[in-house]
Image (cartoon, rainbow, N blue to C red):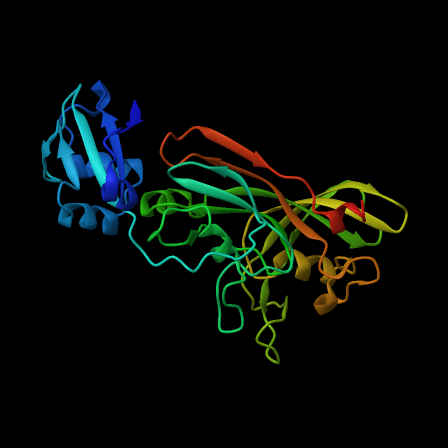
Length: 297
């Protein structure tokens, strides 16, 4: 059983995430480091825990990573959450879909970048997240969406959550493309950055492998609503694949999409599936379509 320590007070609450484990018979006589690594603690995080005062304790006392654990023991780790948080977004209307001590899920609106950059200061999802997270906590988006793409973004509230979730989140994307598609299929075409652009990507034989699975939800005789799952995560993958096949996403001016009915690519991350990084329970989080996307479907 894993449970949360109630011993959070004052500054400790702000800067530490304390996680406790009750040791079961199957882990009897194992070394602490082996137990923690199997749980998902990275080598770098384990090194930090060893350097942190009371970073690892066993039955309330200081413990070394090489110490043995026994059935019924209570093992505790204290993870520092300290990091640089961007300034809070003024007039924040980004909706929080889910949040606890380990993860935060926000519904990113279209036209909002995930991270701050030279051209975007104070108007990003990172700034919106600062309104919901503890102060002095680093912003750790487990994955990113393009600026114009809307939908769910999962943010890890500590380093352990980030380690355990990276590359382990399934996403249901929905898109509206030009033309009629029926049934389902898989696109397996490599993608690389175009030599004449720092932004645009294209299908190329010497690119990186990119695999997109799609299912046609419905069509209106002109355009098709698609449900899409990615096996790989290349930049602009969905947009490039469907444009290459002659079915560009509506609103996607970069890849030949019709912008008459929507002013950004019609792409939305609606549902995410993952195991919670601490409880390890299967978790599903869903959100609605944004207003401009609803206008298409």
